[in-house]
Image (cartoon, rainbow, N blue to C red; front, side):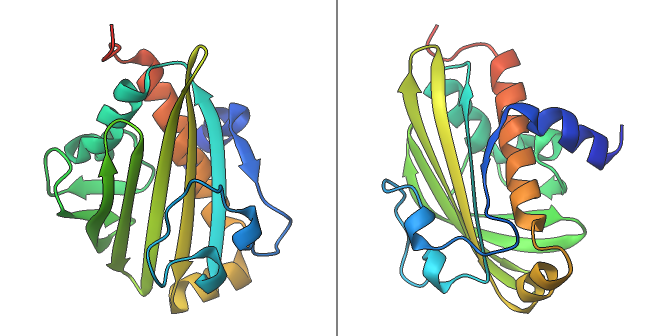
Length: 183
């Protein structure tokens, strides 16, 4: 199945927040996301958000996000990962480019955040996992800065939103098929 076909199928149940080709601004950010200095939506060349209810416990979804070595199995575009369980720093290959990732927030099983540098971009991705009836409400937000982000926003304004929505849809799919960590 092609990336486009996987995206269309997997993203069908993910609520996406986007306003055409306009970059979202700080007022669109979830109020419980913690942004490190310099990485707020107002400082970004690209900002996106996706959210969904995952029918699994926060611990199950968090465990999948934290197991970096499994990312190539389910995270779109990741072909290699250099770490086991989430450390303070790890490396990934994303669409053939190496990124160094630095963990900024790690509060099991509710919050994750990391910054990354590589391929002409700097990014911060935040995850917020909240228990709700029937599972976990997951919000993920990304800010991206740099010449590559500027260029992609010009040629394909919704690139980050599509990628973010697919990542969340895959998290949902894999979490819902995993043994529940709270069972």
